[in-house]
Image (cartoon, rainbow, N blue to C red; front, side, top):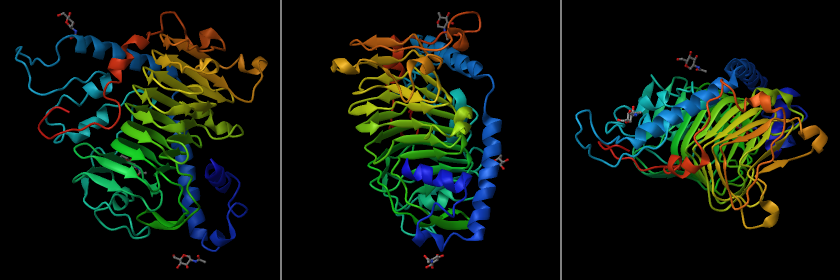
Length: 441
Ligand SMILES: *[C@@H]1O[C@H](CO)[C@@H](O)[C@H](O)[C@H]1NC(C)=O
Ligand SMILES: *[C@@H]1O[C@H](CO)[C@@H](O)[C@H](O)[C@H]1NC(C)=O
Ligand SMILES: *[C@@H]1O[C@H](CO)[C@@H](O)[C@H](O)[C@H]1NC(C)=O
């Protein structure tokens, strides 16, 4: 959060006042021009990515879940002529059913780009580009990254589908600054990004992050870092977020296992929008997801985020997510552990909670799923927060607010979600999964 504010000042107020003395000497005019151009382009892209009909998007997702669950109750492991297909494919939700049952998933990796749902549904990442195979887990040169490393892959200009040659543990020396039109696809290997800096998706568009373990991320001091093939510059210290989505749009984060980072697990901030976070498994962390970093930053009104089929598991405390301003569709997630609250925020966010399972902790004072900050009831009673089809366990309760018609609770336009009773099935494979060549995943 500290550095988030720091960069916001840099972008929106001008950076002369915001940089520490040691940093000033290296902020060149060129740096300023490069970043100003990126900010301007990203702002335009973010505004274009905003969907004026969010309910079409939430309905579409719910309708896909209906189709997928009807299908999986029929025997999906039978072929066209009734023969039993080999392999353990039991994809339970519509995103997974789009690719996991294909035994040739590794020859058709880019098929994944057609599988996103929710606000990030148009994300195609590196589809159509070359496949880049990461062969080297090291991260030693921030300015001239070695070919074969993840850092060398993510700075390239063209679309790339980035995969990993074998299992690896990558300890990032500094934030990994990811450019537009990239997919980081950890399928077929166990890839851990851990014990160093996290992933930074800043002022770019169209990025897929898939099937990784991201944990034990630390704050790093900053320094000279290459941010594209034609630019490197001085970065201030990083906060220690697992994945930071900053002023970016069309972002899809799927099947990531995350725990124990110094700051948040995922931040979506600085007017980012068109984001889907799905099939992730979150554990062992206090402040889990932050959507919107400051109450003063009204540009976050364009933020639209879908949270679907995630498992909020053991050792979590709060902020799943904590939202400001935007529209958040929280659908078919399994909240098996929260110690303080699950879903909350300030500055009038719109929260549509559908078909989740909320299991309250033992603590009598923490049964409420929701939490509002910095507002009297006279104010928050107008914020639109609705719960539909959620399954409440152990005395969990969701305090609704706002005009009920705003998020059409009933009526023709509404496609009801699959209920919270289905959620342990829908989220059964949350987190990074093991996939083998020539077998369904
Ligand atoms: C500025 O960056 C260059 C590397 O491009 C480095 O050689 C130089 O020492 C830096 N200057 C300061 C004052 O940090
Ligand atoms: C599942 O099976 C039933 C009965 O055979 C059929 O009517 C229905 O269309 C099937 N559903 C799907 C999604 O294939
Ligand atoms: C990303 O790819 C699209 C389609 O190929 C292209 O139009 C766009 O310019 C690329 N964006 C960036 C920032 O490179």
